[in-house]
Length: 95
Image (cartoon, rainbow, N blue to C red; front, side, top):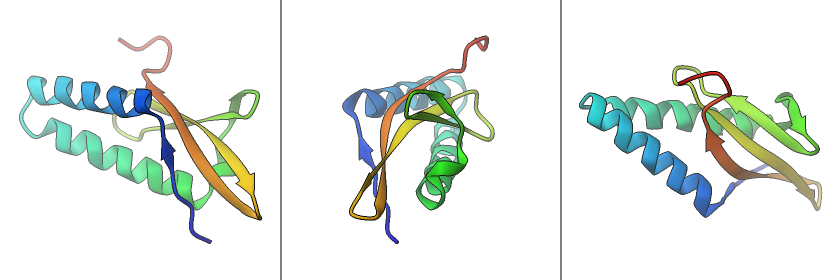
């Protein structure tokens, strides 16, 4: 079963902003950030329902290395789930 993402413009902007910030902090850090995001996306694609719901149908997947979470909805249709990436934000309490 192939699953794709519908990435919202706000999520794309969040990713770009975070990557720019990390690259400004240290050269090459943005690349590490994007690798972590890609691994998290792969986990979501493979098993979107393994992640906890945090509000209604919205689920949260934490990045492994960086203090960010991917919030998404896994939409079902025709027997398939299609995760919709809503936004990427820092978890509460981290600065």
